[in-house]
Length: 230
Ligand SMILES: Cc1ncc(COP(=O)(O)O)c(C=O)c1O
Picture 1 (cartoon, rainbow, N blue to C red):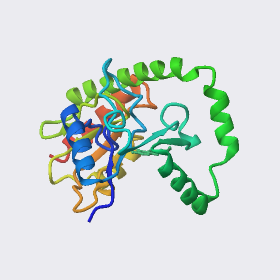
Picture 2 (picture 1 turned 120 degrees about the vertical axis):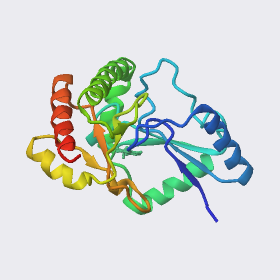
Picture 3 (picture 1 turned 30 degrees about the vertical axis):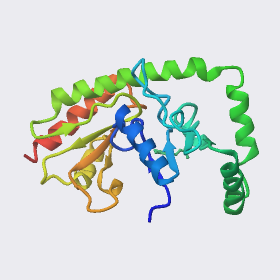
Picture 4 (picture 1 turned 90 degrees about the vertical axis):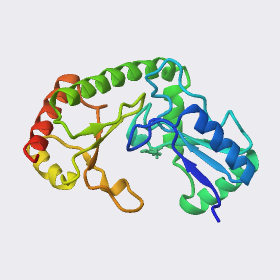
């Protein structure tokens, strides 16, 4: 009875995982066969740390994919402006629905983004933040390896903003957060990301706004708090 399929193929929020090439083809093929519109939500796609990012599903079947992009992750988060690539009849319907929902996205915001990017700013800015985030991601992965105790595991993202951590089963990351904040370290507990039964021993780390020295210090403190619970 499903009416559409939502997917987040690149450096997923919250896990940082990427949908492999063969599964992209399989998803596009299955949706086309079932007549199911496929939403490709891709706000993190430009933040790839590989030189050969995987192809968009949009390019595999432009008639069957509704592609969504955002300026939030490449320009400035507060701007909350995005865009859709989809067949024209669908865009016209979405425009009607959006006008009914919020009248329109503010024109001033759209004009600000247009002025900021029209002369090619993103072509130089995106490589800069890719390198910055890639280095910070590596600093966090190295720190996790050094300071997190045995029994913990984490994802190794190829882009984006997040690392997903799994703690030993008896540790509740919500309770851990309270102790961590007292030591000026914050993360997002994993439970709210689950649609069904949550795994309380999971958490999301972000490495994008903090320089490597602070990442190392924060992961060291967090590692000690976790080790004390083993
Ligand atoms: C998967 C995903 N889609 C969309 C968004 C929102 O993008 P925007 O800031 O354009 O609303 C986010 C995060 O902010 C996200 O993680």
